Image (cartoon, rainbow over all chains, first blue to last red):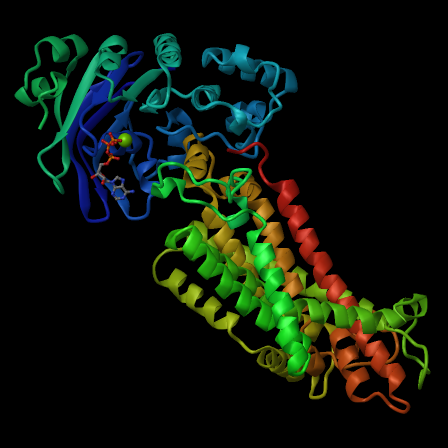
Length: 259
Length: 362
Ligand SMILES: Nc1ncnc2c1ncn2[C@@H]1O[C@H](COP(=O)(O)OP(=O)(O)OP(=O)(O)O)[C@@H](O)[C@H]1O
Ligand SMILES: [Mg+2]
């Protein structure tokens, strides 16, 4: 089930360093939201705050509110582990488990959480997830081979299969295509279009065309200078951002007149 | 190494290339270093004939002479960069050779003298009723195996859990304090570990107590820091991205450690633990104090004295009785068995890291 996300006045810190400041936005369910902005402006940091992955870094903390379908993500009684089960994540660099086969990597979300599942059902889930990630045809004959033996792009799709196998409500993707060729990139974009029927998707990308192609909403992050926190400059429907942005900085960035 | 450079043109001494740029300077043929050192050996031998022939001196003459000649020749023919390369290569090989001398001579000597008594009787009998010839070290071999196994049983869980704490959970003061204490423990002299274990057991069981388990405790004091250190290094090598991948799937931290971090690190952990065992298996001083020695077979570490190989060798050597030859032979054989055990453990460590390493990782 896809879910709605409301972020209000979010400040994100690494120790004493404020990396992101004052973010307000709402993400609609069953939609794709793209986050763009220059390197180091806090896109990954913001994304990781959405499923409480931020706090696994020592000293990292968050102030403000993230509400998912009425539930405060940072509420006192909320278990971060439960949050991460609802909100899956695909990382910038592919990170399959090196000790596990392709099959086990996809089944990892089930196996590592000790959920009991019949072998046939699990087979089914693995196939469905791999098909969903557009990888099934390439690996169906070698499911028992190590996942780290795949090419970089195949590994990234394996990680996507692993993330969707646990059926999260929200899928966060941090530059999922930065290591991929145009064909795999297109395959993943098609995949996102399919996935948004079921999930809420937030994607960070440096590829402006990609943001324009796949997303409904786009958020532009920027930072005023080195050592300053990143801010959400503009959050609007993708068409508007790319045709008629409200802010001058957004226009400069997307037309390449940055800096 | 210089001999790996592409082979020189078929006839290196034939007409030099028309343009003499740096890239096309003539090279010494591949056999040149060997030829130079062979000539140096002959020269050293001739010089040695005049003075006193001494093998070690001859080798030193050869190496020094060969290195200098090779450097000079290379500098003239090939230029300074290549000459320096050859000089450093010679120095590195000489250093390696020097390092190997004590190791090889030790292994050779122990094997030569220990092989004499490496027989069925030695492996199968104890020293009960033996005053001269015969007898064996069955009781000491078993004692060493039992006490080492107990030590491993104590040290591995404590050491591994400490390392997991330091890498996965620890932060701030406590982590610093533990790291410091582990460092201090690494430097504890083994005799002090023995005295500590002895004092501990004497406190409860009265002075003069000798127990196998006390020896295991003493050895654990020595082994735990080694396990912590090696496990810590190995766990740190596990990429953080794997932990994050597991967290992002909603896997709790402890299960991430058990099912992702430890399996990824298992090869290194196994190898580290095996080497830590090898490190303590030959300890003598703490066992001398805590376990003592006996001539009879005692396989119960919770009941009185036991024999162990290092202490056995020590006593056979220092109190051989009359005539001394037989006991001294037994000491050498005990030493040989210890070396075999340590080498076996090293082989096991290599096998572990070969077989458990993540397959096909790139
Ligand atoms: N683990 C960390 N500890 C301390 N500071 C960090 C950490 N990770 C990121 N930062 C800082 O936070 C700021 C935002 O980093 P972030 O990774 O979110 O940028 P980004 O927008 O994702 O950049 P990119 O497009 O290059 O991936 C940067 O100034 C960075 O130096
Ligand atoms: Mg980033």
